[in-house]
Length: 99
Image (cartoon, rainbow, N blue to C red):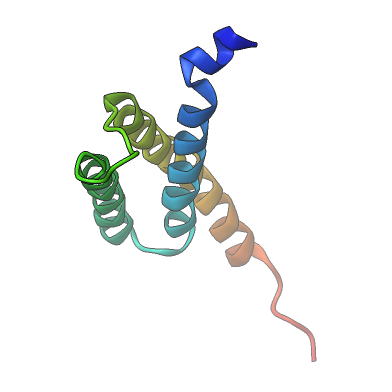
């Protein structure tokens, strides 16, 4: 059990998952140029937050967190694009509601 806590895997997994969700949701709704800008903004936010931790006591700057954040954003985009296409294809092919 000590080996797992020494690796800080749970922390990186939390960063990865949170940033994947942050990138996934706008991918489903926004147009491509908009969600590309949002993705870059989320990555920049993660980098700035990590550098900001250097200024606060009790927090630690870690490059691994930035890598996990960026990987999460890219994964959110990769999962969001096919989901978006699938959702819009279903909406286009559905029958109009009957009154």
